[in-house]
Length: 271
Image (tube, rainbow, N blue to C red; front, side, top):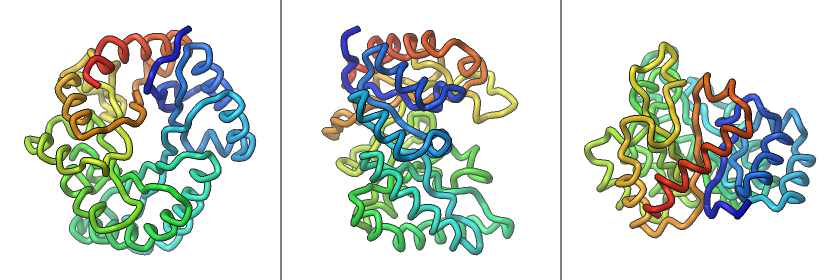
């Protein structure tokens, strides 16, 4: 099969696949890039995964995830993020996706956001030495309590602009609703370290996290959003990242084939 230019299969889209199965699936379908997650990488072994990906000729578009920096005492999280930076470097990716964490037990949202900012300030130098960008991922406000206290691209950029080796993730699911998203994408410019696509499905499932669908199946105007990102000069890989129980239960090859088809028809024309 011909190569699928700039498409990256985020490993979460075929969550039940091993690293080996994910890499082999990309190769079979002509996908040249993969977004990896730390847990399955650890299961396979960091060095073995790095060799597997390199031998397959794949790029690693990103490693997920660092972050979880909002605890009242986040010293353990800082140590884990340094390990994540080292892992990203070993996998030869320059992008560590940062899911910053939700509100801590004290329910102090402002304080949680400040702890994120302080932690990024502390980690940015270490990341720069490793050649890794800390890619802050703003998350839809529905996830503010448990996953991400940075709810807008503007909030992520307010931190990223202050430090070396810090950028942002533009994830369609998390930013499409924002009335200021066009201006903030333009503001982000070269700070966009990763662009991730999927679609927002309704009715929303009981577990909101699993409400993602294939591009074209939901409410997001991906053509418009992709053109906004492309207008900044973004020329990196585009990850398709889908959390969906039915898609996870499907045959890996069928899912990868559909991902490539949707990318060709919906995303690629706007790049």
